[in-house]
Image 1 (cartoon, rainbow, N blue to C red):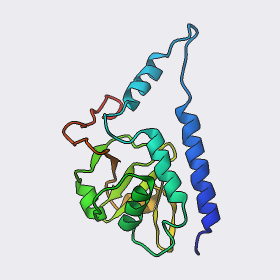
Image 2: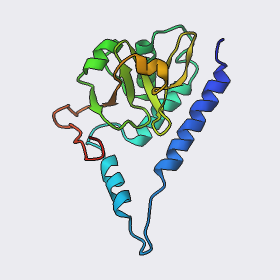
Image 3: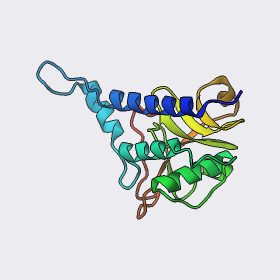
Image 4: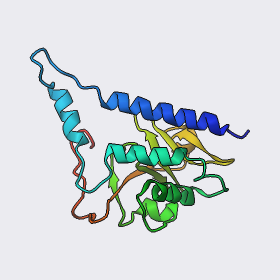
Length: 183
């Protein structure tokens, strides 16, 4: 059964809106200050310089919604590459197996945000909503969405997440530091 493109787009939009709403919520105590838990969460969301911001991630998701990107039958790595290029974040084309090992244009992260890569050995997609573990990629019949913690994807092996390094940044300058929450 082929997924309806309009339903796929609606699901992507709703997932993007849901992630924005949840990101905007903060815990504030009676004195008007952030609670310790909320402060730790805020600190763990800090970006390494020169990596994609959450807004950049949303522009990648918007590019994924553009049906012109996935009109022709493409494999997952070509689809993801064309979406990043369309969104204004070019990188040298890499197969999913190369992305899994790591490339100079991406840095590995433990907590994905919308627009990050979700990669297995042999498959790559784009994180749409990390709170619900939703990603977008080329699937069997066409481009679509799925949960990266679904049984099928768990059987594919260990998943890794990568964030795009903007021009001028290098992995050594932008190494993300793991917080206690990430470990």
